[in-house]
Length: 88
Image (cartoon, rainbow, N blue to C red; front, top):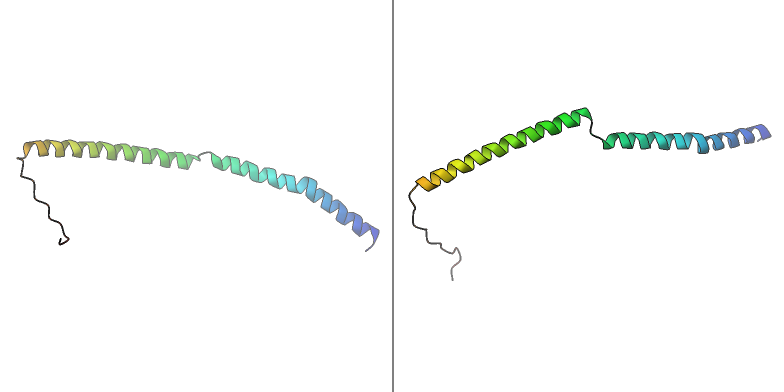
């Protein structure tokens, strides 16, 4: 190899180490930071899930109230004797 090709390889190595590599690192760090925040689509989906959860909670509370009312109106039955499934 002649001297110019060695100098060219050395310059390319120095440029890669001190310019290209840090630029790549900073690029991916900024992408990583951007992905840590919620995107608008994610925020909308989260809001929809929150509304659905609240609606389900209201329905469950209504059902529990109806069941309690129904249970208090119904006459009490005697407790059923429990039997073991294993023979002693």
